[in-house]
Image (cartoon, rainbow, N blue to C red; front, side, top):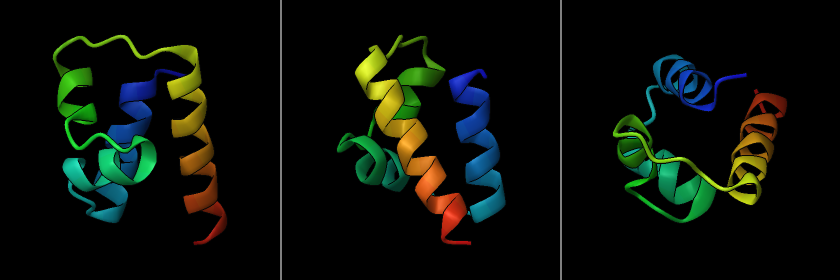
Length: 60
């Protein structure tokens, strides 16, 4: 799984702005922008994003 591509698919599917996603998933509104610019998240951050996405998918 490539984290950024998974997030991008989620954003397209839900219409959620990248800043809101970052704020809700990891408490950082610049998270997606930083990923797009090459940021490498820590394993703990990746786990938080994966858990957030799983929770969102379960709620659909």
